[in-house]
Figure 1 (cartoon, helix red, strand yellow):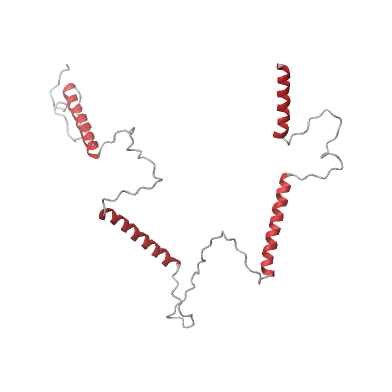
Figure 2 (tube, helix red, strand yellow):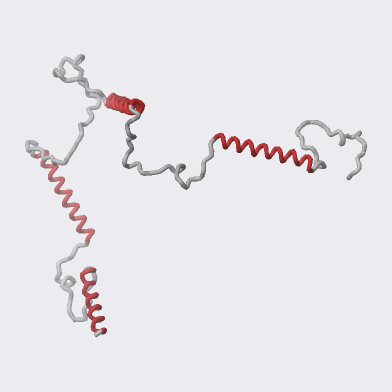
Length: 217
């Protein structure tokens, strides 16, 4: 019974592989030929060739649509309802009723791109200044925080190393400097036999040429 169950499982696994990998060749011990590999079979195109053919057909269809625009200019323009476009910049084209007598009445001056950008910047600065002024005018209002601001400060986290203030850093540097100076002064008394280190241009009283000879310790 166990051998029969294992044989059934092996057969089921083999059958499942046929559907999982249809590109594999059919394994058969029968003396037969493949329908697709026979001499009279229709030539099969590759995947790359099929993609190239589909792309060429799409380009030809697009070219036919563009040619139809010029061939039939009277045909209505078909626009996708989901399209959203902005007005094209008119560049240096302006209409001034005060200087152009031929301009239609009711057309106002058209500002250029630089004026539009400057006006938008001024309005943004004014809106920002108004928002900041509201903080001081109404301090009782709750603080508005962006819902995407979900991070903590690297230096203010609970596991951060303690940060010393500027006064503490200056005091520590001063204490280290005092300790270094005290160590240097203590070495003078601990080792009086050492020569005096000085950058002054002077001679030692005991080492001068006319000094009395000194005996060693």
